[in-house]
Image (cartoon, rainbow, N blue to C red):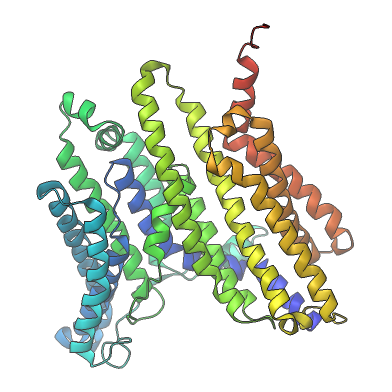
Length: 488
């Protein structure tokens, strides 16, 4: 690859424009993720998020498009986006309520009911779209909808040092992105500062105990599902009306399934869920940027799908851990160490994430061995043997990272029993990943000659700080406080 092309891609990744694109693609992940968080904390995880997003995305386009026919072009352009948003929300609420009715009233299995909602969203939208437009692929040419408004910040902010960078990231973002960012704070306030939110969390922890103190468990679960439907609907409307202005069959592309895992990746907290959503959004945005490199096109295209698989694996493993924690909480009562188990949950997610990213490294290594010619352009003097060498190093390093993190995935309690071993595995994994990221970042600055040293030093410091902040410090203190075993 031409060095100038690589440098342009690198500078593009470490730029305000890239962060702006991350926010755009994070929005349809963040909104349903917050919905999944609310329903999960109430003990009724909404598996049907994907279907709700599709139904709301399609509904928004239909009503936005027809608004121009009903009220004329001028009024339609003004009213259409908000009518589409409103009707999308109505359909999201209705679909979530139907899911709750089948599960809470008719006692149908929640998982099967959610899967049925997903099938309904995929099939019904295509069927109705074909009836309205004669096209099973998208609504372009038949139903051209309005886009949601964009928010323009005051231009004087661009003249202020440092602030100008954030101005470039946040300026001209869709109102849906601003709604998504605000929703993080709103959901946090609702869950932790309102009586209803406290009741919701109590129902999710122990519904029998909540009912014994007068909390209406069924009503709270209905509310949680409806709120998750509202947030999923907002995410769906953003997909079709945030930047595109049309609906495409199955356009959510697994984002509803990713949303099921992000609350676990974020430690069951709104802020953590927001950060986890940004991680998955970054994968999506990165696939677009890397796609401009002269490498096999399938490799960057697989990034979003790898993120979906990662999300589902993390969701499954963390769901098992959540059941274990609830059992221990009930068995131990007041002796239950909630802080300890919260730390275990957060650190186990990071172990899982490190191993999942390493799987992609193995995929890259395999690609370099199977199609070496596609990677010759990465260096001006690269040969097939050079590609094989780097491919082997990437594969060996990835397998090593999977190996050191796997024991803590299979037995998460090992993290508490052996915190230093957990720290070693996690810090080494993070150090390699973050060291590479910071090294590439320094390459774009005036300190490029010291990029390797500075990058990996910064990566090491940040890795240790992350481990301590996620719960490592508590594990070390707890381990230090435990009395030494008596000598035989």
